[in-house]
Amino acid sequence: MGCRLLGFLWRTLILGCFALAFAAQAATLSGTATDSKGKPIANAAVTLTPATGQPVDVHADANGNYSIPNVAPGTYTLSANSDGLRSMEISVTVTEAPHQTVDLVLSAQELPSAPAAAPPPSSPSLADLGFSPQQTQGNAKLQATLEKRTRMLKVHQKLGLLTAIPMAAALITGSEAKVEGRRGEVVKVPTDANLDFHAALGGLTTAMYFTTAYYAVFAPRVPGTTKHGGIRWHEALAFVHGSGMIVTPILGAMAYKQETSGEKAHGIAAQHGTVATVTALAYGASIVAVSWPIHWKFWDKQ
Image (cartoon, one colour):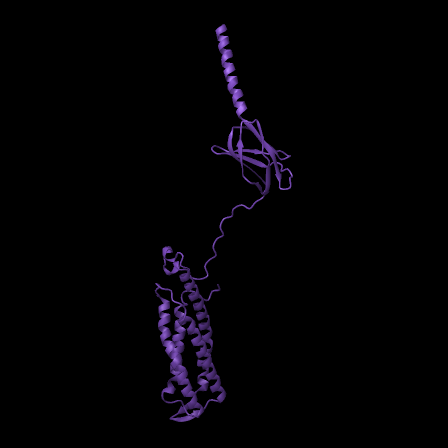
């Protein structure tokens, strides 16, 4: 009986020593959470994160005081937050001292924001033209060439649509500026006002046409690209109306000289109206080729 009692006391003593040793190693970490002006922050959420293992979360009391008991010695990260306020993460080394104090200062800090979404491109990209990312990576010159070409083609289309207005007006007024005759005799001579107005419309059309053409002809080319569909038809028709816009003013000047002399347009000058009509039809067809059934490519605002 005495031996059993002695053994029980011995085991109790050993366990008590282990408990005292553990209690001596564990520490209590405490402090106060305040704002940048030193005002305590009630109910602030305090997080103690070990190098390995699960973090420990506690809340401060109404006076901003927090306490984390039974913290084993080691290195931790301590932080706090409350209603949009955050503290800097503090590295804390807990020793075998029974009590350690670490105060936390919370302030408004910007959280990392997600990168802003890129706006929709206002013009075709190099990828749209069939270039791979490897080909376009770091090639700012090629991208600048594409952007300049797009800008010039937008101007080309806008001026092209505007040019169609005086062109149509010149065709309409052509009948009023034409000498009519029968069996070689002059029956009707247009007034000088009709002739001059028609000539002015023709001159305006010619000037606007070649200004329009300038933006298409001198738009920089993007190497490695091919044209297809309506663009190819548009350029093919350009040879027709381009030639017509050179010949039509020449024949018009010849017809104007003959008619102001009271003569009916004759010779090659008599073909002025026919050439002008063919030119206008080819011009209109070239516009349709790049606008139907697809939308206007370059009319949209940037």
